[in-house]
Each structure stands twice: as C-alpha cells, then as structure tokens.
Amino acid sequence: MFSIALEGYEKTFEACIESQKEYCLKHNYQYVLINTSPRKMKPKEAAWIKIPLILAALNTGYEWVAFIDSDCEIRENTPPFDAYFADEAEKSIFMATGKSGRLNSGVIFIKNEPAAVEYFKTILANADITVPSEDRTSFENGHIIHYGKGNNNIYVLDHTIWNNNSLLNQESYIQHYSSGILRDWFYKTHNIQPKTKSVFQKLIDKFTKNTPDKRDKGYYTGHLSVELKQLMEFYYKSYNGFKKIEY
Image 1 (cartoon, rainbow, N blue to C red):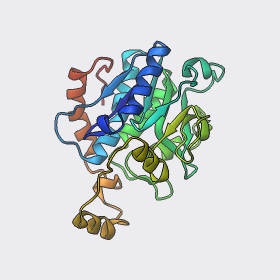
Image 2: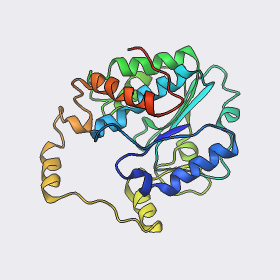
Image 3: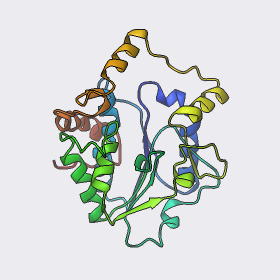
Image 4: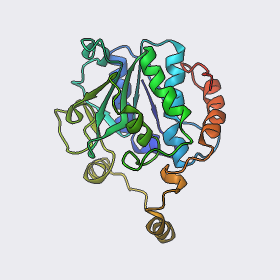
C-alpha cells in the first residue's frame, strides 16, 4: 500500500497517514509514503504520478497493490483487503464511486493480473489525450472513469464503506476527508488552519473555471507523459518497491 503526501500534506493529514501505517502493520502489508519530489510538482503531476507508481509497484511483482489518498482514515475495524476480496476471483481492480456516482481514484485495490496492468497502462498511454466531456473531471480521475467504462475486471465497491467522502460514519472502513463538510470537520477536530487562496488566485480560478484547456485542472495535459517519465526516474531511485516500467 502506498500514499502520496507532498507540499505539506504529510503534516496536515498526519492522523490519516498514521491510521494507514497502523493498518498495514496490523495486516503485515508493506507501506510506502511518497513524501518527496525532485522539484515542486504541478497539481496535475502530483495527482497523475500515482498511475506510473501503481504500474511500477505491479511490475515489482507484488500479489496486490493498493493506493490510498493521504486524506483517508482507515478505521481499526477494517478487514485485510486481500482476504476480503478473495471471493471475487474474476475481478482484479477494486474501486468505489464518488459523490458524482462515477469511479473515484482516491482508494484503489489492485490484484496483480494482466487485465489490471493493461487498464493502468492504457490510462498512462493516453495521459496526453483529453477524455470526452461526460467523463472529464480534475486530473487523472477522468481517465480512470473513461477507461473504466465497460471494464468487466473492475469491482465497484460500496463507497459508504470503502471510500466514504460524503458523510461522517464511524462504521465506514475508510473515511475520506476529500472536501466540503468532511474536510472542514477534519480541520476543526485536528486544530488545522486551512490554506486560503489569495484574492488574485481566486480571480484566476473564477475566470478560468470552465476553460477546457486549464492545465492545472487536468483538462489539457500537453506533454504530461514526458513529465511523468522524468519524475519517475527520481522515484525509482528514492523508494523501494517500484520497478522501472517501459513506456
């Protein structure tokens, strides 16, 4: 299992990250926290880097690979995911939907099988291509949605259990403080002062909100694949568990 916490996220979501570490220790999983980068990464790069990292982890030969956002709390009653999904022999990718009813890339469990590898390879191979408007959302999640359509290898999890980003529920296995009232609740209960945007940045966001080629929202990727390939050279050298992949 790995998570990514850059630009202060490691400190902000320390409680969530600790819950992830404890879960992995309890069930004898390897845990890797990606908390460094070779340079300041653009928001789209920080979001997209999980895709080649997933492929690199699968390429290492792990039987299972899991990715989880750093703002996800794993509760103490969460069962070992590999045992929990063992009965779904014909499925190799396990994700929940988000508030929009579409696949959410905040929590992903992957069984190391050819179909799963092919799915993430397809996403990475098309990183420079804009997906259709009905699938489009910020960063890589639009590609997760688009290439997940009709994919019989994907098992759609109950998001209220495995990736709850809508309501606070102690019965959920994974509580995702992704935005809105859940993020506000997390900040308040952990005495965290949220970052605020400058007036200038708010004006930029207002006038570029619906611009289809807004790079930092992931709608236009340009040469993102090249940027990701360059960034991955750093991660191959800096972290164990990620074997170099061929593009």
